[in-house]
Length: 202
Image 1 (tube, rainbow, N blue to C red):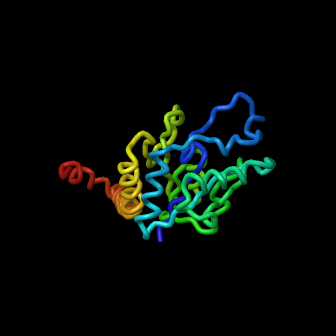
Image 2: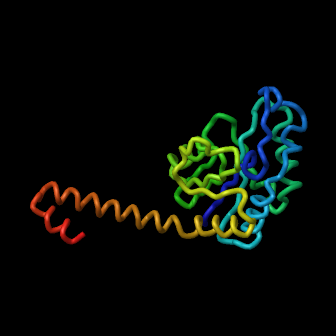
Image 3: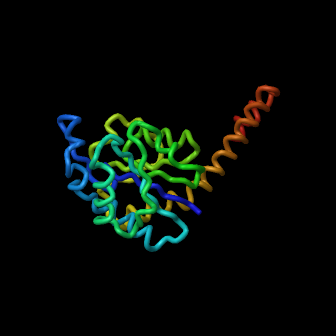
């Protein structure tokens, strides 16, 4: 079973810029976040029509906020009720999201807008997919899989489906290819005369 973990802030919900950090602690901050409609509808489509993919929410919360978790739950229930509350996983801000998942492998996908989360996820063995939401990816540090929020819900869904269904197998093939290349390189080092024949074959 493949699992698609979906971030909330900046992914399902549009991120609200703040001037002061304290604004994150104000009542209503998370509850009134605007919806990333295309992303929400794409995830809804996967949840309803792709039984081979388990969809879960994986969102960081402010542990010392009296409002954050309750407002996130209310927001999710209002905007994407197809995902039940038992499939909400709330992590602690600043800690790797992978710490809150017991088993992670290549079939564990994280859709997130924050490169740090994705790098930590892949370091734990999962597969990251970055949502380009119009305000992130300014430095281009993420070189992995990505989708763009402006694509239609159908295009987003299809792209996510392709990435989750087929890329793990492609990745395994690439890994085998890398192993083969490494073995070829080692062979060349042990037999320098082989260089000429390989260059001519290319």
